[in-house]
Amino acid sequence: MNVFESINNTSNRASDIGEQFLDKTQEYYKLKIFQQVSYTITMLGKALAIGGVLFIGLIFIAFASAIAIGDLLGHVAYGYLIVGAVFIISAFIIYKVRHLIDSAVIKKFQSKIFK
Image (cartoon, rainbow, N blue to C red):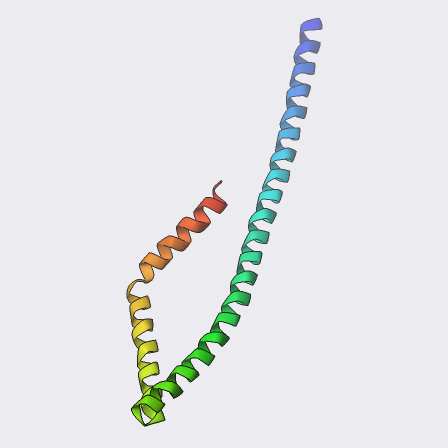
């Protein structure tokens, strides 16, 4: 009977170790998910804060530039047209190179998520 008791004890220990492994694995993935979610939220918050301030600054620079160009050309409407055209051309260029932006963002997050 000693052999059967030894096998029984070994199988019980293996079962306990397996349960501990599953528990630790579950805890690890909970922590990993928390890390990724918190990283994503903080990056999004920083991007919104910085982007909002930059957007307001860009609006003020655009109006000031339009007025200055309009004064140089003798008609304020021309200044607004030129500044508007610069924004449209910039948007078109960004649209054409959007795949480069996508790949840069994916590479940035790839190193954070799959480490």
